[in-house]
Image (cartoon, rainbow, N blue to C red; front, side, top):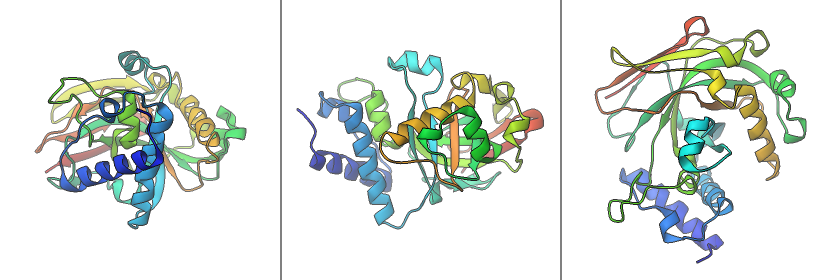
Length: 268
């Protein structure tokens, strides 16, 4: 069954209700076996429109599925992207209220803070550097309004479900440090991600398509295909270089980026 615009809107409303109610829903890829990546982004776009109509503001973007391990696991060869709204930003060291998210996980990333617009036609690593005000350590909080594995069929969600679900994005925590990206070799920026006292993950920026600058180029080019662009003032999460770590109630996280800085949060 092919998806129509009405189907896209119905799916977006289901996601919105799931988020508000704090429960998960089944996979769209099972409801619509002929679903495509175009459909997935159309659902995400319809969901974004619902958020904007409710008074939210777009303050940034996220890039996901940038590591080869994740791409191989899902059988794809490209990243995905989503939207960061104003209410997704948490202060460094903040405690996330209980019940804010359904099934949160945490990743360590490098965030780009944009000084000027970046259009796909200008998408080169040099153009990214010229358009960037600063880079900063960050945590991305993932959440999923769609079951990771369908409780009835046992089938896992696909990348199409993830894209439709805003690339699984739910929150961002920015560290206090700011760096001129032209003075930092981002491929060698690393982080130690701890949950409590336990080191859960370590990684380097090179895990993001070889260099986070490359993931920024990819996003600019993808947005250009749809007449969109990265705007001045937006914050862009360039992609995780560590595995997503579960964040149950009562857990706390610190991502230590060494000289690059640190960022932390906790979950009530």
